[in-house]
Image (cartoon, rainbow, N blue to C red; front, top):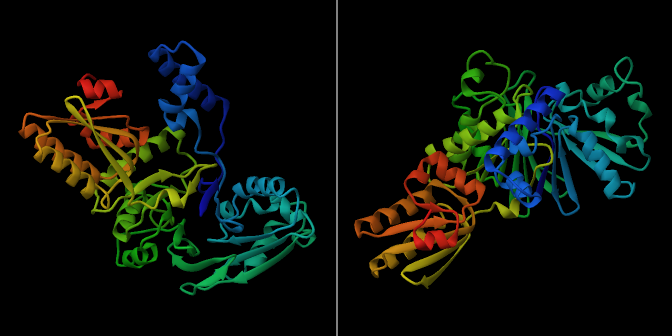
Length: 433
């Protein structure tokens, strides 16, 4: 199952102007100068590995539209401006062949439906479009937007066949191969979230939903329970959501982490970002949220991301609970190679293996982390326990080959100042930074 974001901004599209572009170029060049780059290869590596995502890319400009695909079965969540890009992509990938498009609507605020008039498949005979909603008046809402004086092409003049289907909260229905269950949410005019399940995988789309820390939280914990991927509205900080912007119908990253961890969610994706938030701001939101996930960890791994236009997540890659461990002797050290995810499921095995090495008299252990995709606080605890055990025996644990995400976890948790981390294999084996 694949989740692809075509639009992730909330409220209205956010533009990129010349001042924004100049500022990004300036910041990137300043960082490049400090590194003393000398050739194209170094520049590419610097862009891909050293620049923050907010400088080397962008979180995008489109309003909500999310594609959830499993083989040929596809569901679209909301019809914001991202729907235009999806439609153009769909026509190109199918060489113009007709298709049946299924769109789940959270509600009819403009940012969630303003892309539909520009959805090219709607203008082509043979295409079918089915729009699903728990609200009454769906057909009227789309027709009003798609008529004079708001738009030059009247809704009745669309060439595709368009149908509207009413859904009901708590009632599960099969749509395009997915089992889909809606849930009502706190938002002006009410919005609806959706839980989609197929082939043992589950995605929850929960945008434009306000959470106030009340008894209703348990209902959402049940709705999110065990989801592989949770798309969660985090437009505001908790302080804003509970003060100046209370009753505006949106939530925060802190509430997202808390609910996701209590529900045993595997991957929390922050969505519906504030249009005034810059890419730099969203980089910080991501870093802060990862830190919150570590500080609030209740024992289960939680991967965190911020949605952006073009983000693709394959659920088979985030299922967790798999790690390979290989142990070999390298002169005076033991080299432990780990591949996969070090989380609450896999870290006990890692810890047991290394405790055995310490018990057998090994005093220098080097962990090759080049294949380590993810680490949770449970994994950090295991590493800390082994490090302390070795120090008590005048030994040392060292790591090398951390990818950007794993290294960031070490940095925001403070573990980078506790555990020796090396850039290279030789440096780690030789004890040199």
